[in-house]
Image (cartoon, rainbow, N blue to C red; front, top):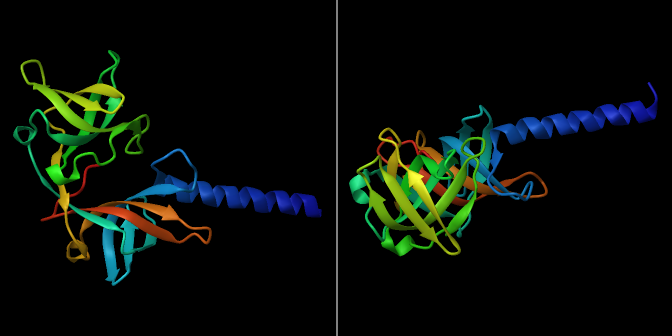
Length: 209
């Protein structure tokens, strides 16, 4: 086996490993290797590190910093959403150009403006995330939210079986073994993962986003 062939095998192996890793820790933004979404259950806690069993089956270590934001995820319902409410929704496109929600999370007033806009998201293939203020809520023909954000607007159908949750400020005391989380992390040049934000389920909740 010549040197060039051995090098080719090594390159293919590295690409394969990277692909397998990325399949479990899905990117949330366009820039590769910059911001990664991790969904799973906390299996270990130390002051500045979480051990997480990701939904993909991977076990990962996630570093915490003083800037890591922690938010609690609690159960909500459609009555908690009113004109002027600030929400986020992961959704998929429909044939008529509107969106069909996969989940909806309601922000408290002090977090209004968080992530304002409409962009690709990693919950399922083809999904998007829309964060903005509710203009109106029509319930006569299904449950349709008009969501306004800087530079645009989306109409989002919210099916009856779609989870609706509150997303509220919390602290690290919520981060315990057995708690389900969604966290967005940055990956350093050495492969270490550092959490930017963590949404943690409270009272047994599994964050739907």
